[in-house]
Length: 130
View 1 (cartoon, helix red, strand yellow):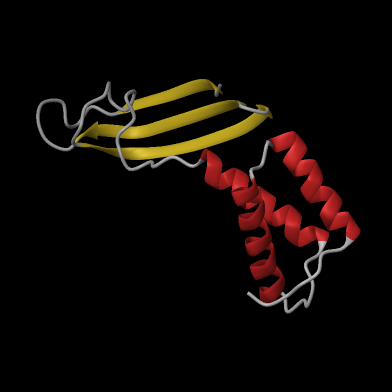
View 2: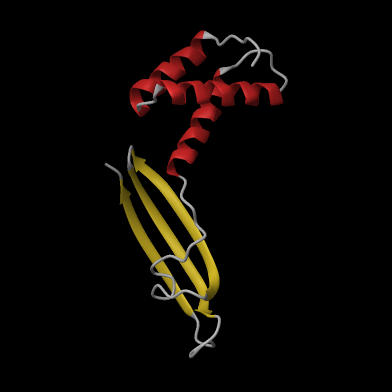
């Protein structure tokens, strides 16, 4: 990684993120690396506050990411071998608290009884981490 500088606003934003989000030293370094990459893509010689802000957002996405390749327990009552569509919306209410909506439609078993019976489901979630 080549040398770079960050301005006072970027430094203040990083300090605020450390205090409010509980960012570790390792996460701090990852944020700087990601911000440097973003600045490089924009052909900027120095990291700016916009680059730091975007890098912090990516960190929060990474932190809350979950694999979504397994069927949800509510997807056709937990059956495997199902076919359908899912749309998901999540909104952060506060630190460690989020509100989510999952909408499943055209859900049916791939084979077996009732393969022509379709299910539609709206699921509301309140997620908390501690």
